[in-house]
Image (tube, rainbow, N blue to C red; front, side, top):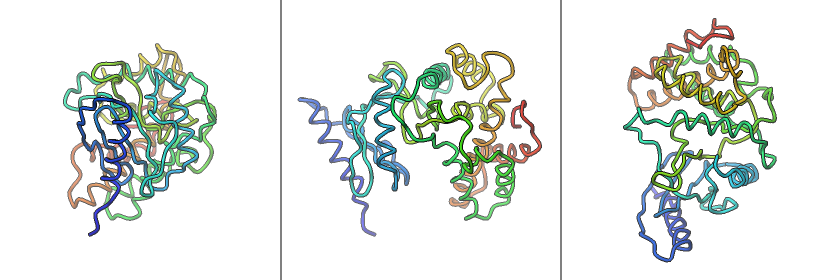
Amino acid sequence: MTPDPLLPALAAHVRASAHARAAACPCGAATLAERPDATVVRHAGTVAKAHAPGADPAALALRVTAAARLPGVLLPPLAPHPVPLHGRLVTLWPYGTPVDPDDPDAAPWEDAATLLARLHRTPAPVAVPPMRGPAKAALAVDRLREIRHPGAGTVRRAWAALPAWARDEAPMPDAATLCHGDLHLGQLIRHPAPDGPWLLIDVDDLGTGVPAWDLARPAAWYACGLLEPGAWHRFLAAYRAAGGPAVPPEGDPWPALDVPARALTAQTAARALTKATAAGRPLDEVEQALVDACARMVPVGPGHPPG
């Protein structure tokens, strides 16, 4: 098999970029991620990301520009435009300290909520495309057609019960609010490293849309029993305290969160089924909890947690 030339080319690109920014470079290098949809390489304080194959150059350029114009909320890029490299678009970013996956008690839920509220309250600085959350969820569910698993029908029925906009089959009801589009704890870093303020990263899904989508993953985890109630309530309280518009300032948040939370539950369950099937293994406890939540979702009406 011919080796993929992307990774060494990306490493050379980030090394040259790092050396152009520092007279004395410590030259520490690492591959931070290597997936079909993203390859991320670090050299000292510079990070290069090769975005998904087929990424829209104009849309990505607008998203990178938006990040540059939202300091204190989004990590600013080191270069103003994506550049092509072996058929992929590449962007450059400063390195930051990620969330420690081995210390869940230190997870910065309040910081994440505050950053989201600030993002949602800020007008888009450029005409960014629609937020890509529903499109990514639809793609994950559509991939269930390629597998045979008893849980696939359960997830697809839960998905079919959602309104058209959440399934990426109609425009979102909000076309003005700036959203991240794929919020989880892996999308936060401290910059400057190691202990600067938390910032949001990853602009691939940034755009205008329904802000409740950005709260939907922790809401879904809470509803499925995968996020302890204290963390969820701290997250929600911090978002409200910062003036976030996705939910009412007080009272029941679920009428706003219900549809996005159900959509994220279906998306995450679909990905779990796809991965488990590809690996030829049974679902683990967390994955089964997601599929079970989908089984309970169809009769659920607005105003109640999905599961």
